[in-house]
Image (tube, rainbow, N blue to C red):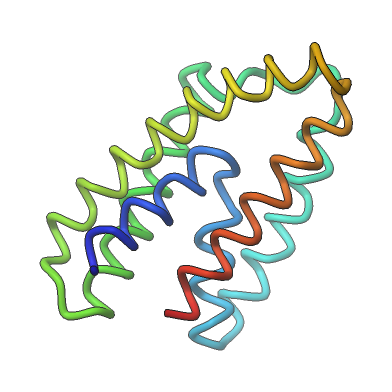
Length: 135
């Protein structure tokens, strides 16, 4: 179960780099969660801007992979799983989320438009993150 949660939270990192760590640290309490939540909200807003770079460009992808590894480590350890393996699984989840999310969003843009597609992706990321951290 710990590794499945690590993959799922890593997947969220692939969709939105700050949403998964924000959810995880908000659930734990403390100032770090609040700071990450502010960054997550800024990312959600910034994602809608036309000048935003692709999530698969090197800087954005590296941030998502780091985020996936960190949340994978923490969620696996919190569920008595192997933290290093959780980090690896979190990175894999982030890769799947980044590339799969990009493909899904491109397909959705053709059907419903850019802003609705982005908002649906936001809802999925937030809901999945909330689900995982409450387990």
